[in-house]
Length: 303
Image (tube, rainbow, N blue to C red; front, side, top):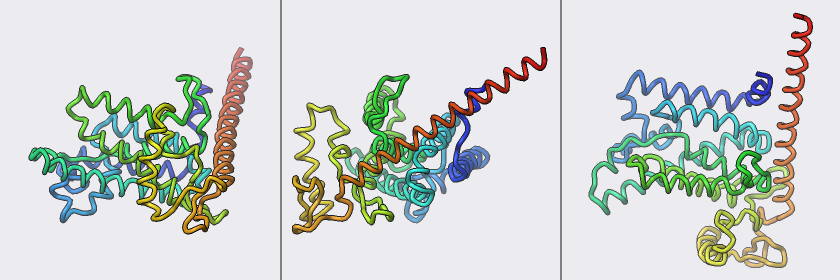
């Protein structure tokens, strides 16, 4: 009981509020099944119901979905929000949710035109798992070398392993179309946002151009010589005529450094993440020890 008290503590108010929204959305669709038509992403009805590009991400249609999403939000948010700040954390959720929904919508329309199967148009798609996938990318950025004691793997491999496992499972489950595109786009949009967009007001920087957060780091080492040239093409598409400066280890645009091309800031960001994680773990261990001591004292008093 004492260890549980330490684990299930320290959740932020923002994460608790968002958890209430997820649970409330699940209750609504259970009590009013017809509301799925208006709240979930149904590609054939997104026009004129365009708001479902936003609402779909906060609607969980199954019990296990709302449980996983709520726990994932609370535990990952407990690490990410103190590092990013509440405003940036909320912005990340909104942006990743919206962009993921847009990508899933476009993919469903494309699959319909390719296969002519109408289920791609009328399948209700929803869930917070796209944002959770983005959270994993954020944790990869902040504490990449932190090792998970149970799995004996480093945190930086969590997004890749999650996608690999999801793709393998998709071969055996017909429902894969309802979750796999969301996970893939949630991961990719999360990386795009953190790599090129996220602002750092205190340092007046944008993004994280460090080599440790390159797109190829999602793949095993032996694939990186293949992935890097392909990724550089998309990098030029995103950044125009930007080039990698090997001397400064940052980005340049016509000889001038791009905002956010400071590897020192990226290192500081990871250090802040590591400190935040250590502080959380220390606080939980201290709370667990205090609860254990209190329990022992109560036991002695009772005797």
